[in-house]
Amino acid sequence: MTHTTIPATKTARRGAIIEVLASQAITSQEQLRRELAAMGVDTTQATLSRDLLEMRATKVRNAAGVQVYSVPDADGSHTHEAEASQARLVRWCQDLLVATDLAGNLLVLRTPVGAANLLGSAIDAVRMDGIAGTIAGDDTVLVICRTPADADRVQAALLELADPGSTPPGPT
Image (cartoon, rainbow, N blue to C red):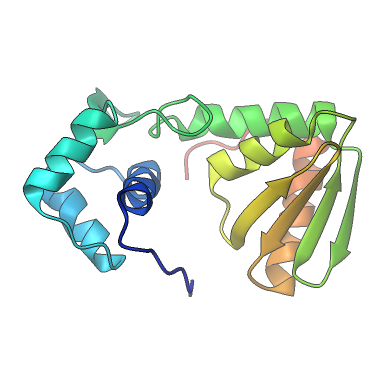
């Protein structure tokens, strides 16, 4: 169970919209409004419509052929492109992950100088379960996991992706 608190701000509401669109196939504004309400974000249809317009939301066909809402994500890809985000994470793990170190629920990732932001952004884009957030410096990414078990699991997953023979998993 997550303990995320979302402030009642426009920026937070739009962040929640991105999270919902990235994790679910949303086909209508009403469905999106209900999902936001379940997260504790109450909004009117008019506000939601304005947010989607200003966020450059479009309806696209997902892999199943269903038209769903999508907006540009933080990494520039569209929120419905989970497979592309996973492929980017595989590439960056293989090219940039130098070492990992566990410290309780914290996972420290080492990269070449100047590359931490690329790896941190790729981790953020795939929205792995158990990760509360990342902080990227110059050559270090701090992955804040919800529990030590989550940190163990995330470390194992990233090291597996760093294996040169690794390929992104298929749709789940």
